[in-house]
Image (cartoon, rainbow, N blue to C red; front, side, top):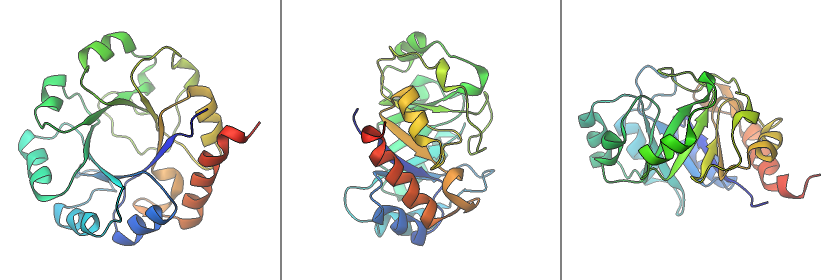
Length: 211
């Protein structure tokens, strides 16, 4: 089993960003969705991004944002990938000419992965979250991992309620390319817990050798 890549989402401070980077994560998620308790301004995001060590991928998260809002973030921050959590069409997602993830609302049950893979052919991955359609993520709840078919061709990012305690089971069940955690490694919304981050990363790294 390949060790999944690790993304920690909902970063709101430079201190948390550097702490997560020190534990060896692969990507950080910045939430540009104002209703979220993990929302970050362009100015704060720019400060964080400018201080990151090399090889950390920065993912900008949006939900049903006006195209101008996304362009503003891209033009003012070094965003490597985009993540769309709403009802964005493939045409909308592609217009920014950056690699993107499309979040799927697994709280509604099993989506038609074949149709979605055709529709979002240029998406670099599907992010499987536990929210329902038109809801935001970060609820801390899990979905039924068993509804994810084994034959999905596009890379999958497992999200939604992951914690240090359940991430290994989630990985074994879904066999994702990556895992994405936000509330499961927090002290409170937007503030990460160093010990939980350490445990989460350790458990992901060790999952392939754990019986």
